[in-house]
Image (tube, rainbow, N blue to C red; front, side, top):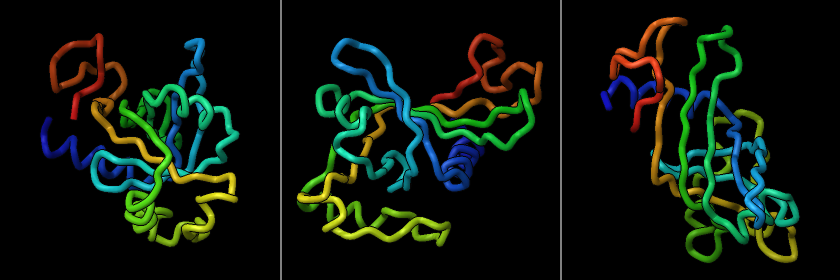
Length: 160
């Protein structure tokens, strides 16, 4: 993975406010949910959700997740995306205090501030994180071109 692709991935993560979170229920049925997120470092993503939300209920039993951060403003066939998978969990204790230093984003892009009381009982909301174990970036290229990273046309992702 080149430094250029790392920078490309970082720019996508920094520019986009939502990620699509993929979870599965106990029967293995997939569920996707868009969530406002904040990055915490290079391989951790944070979001707040109600414990009763379908994706939160799924995470309680099956913490394995996948996610994608993508730029929906680009022209068709010019996709730009970061894919990742890992383990997600609701935060508590010192982990919660640490994460509140990164969530919400501090760049003034419209998110309301939250405090500890907003994400602990009796509130029904929790602050979640996914610790990424695998990450890829969609190879930046023009439509119809092969990915210059590996010269194949069958997969346009490069592992980070």
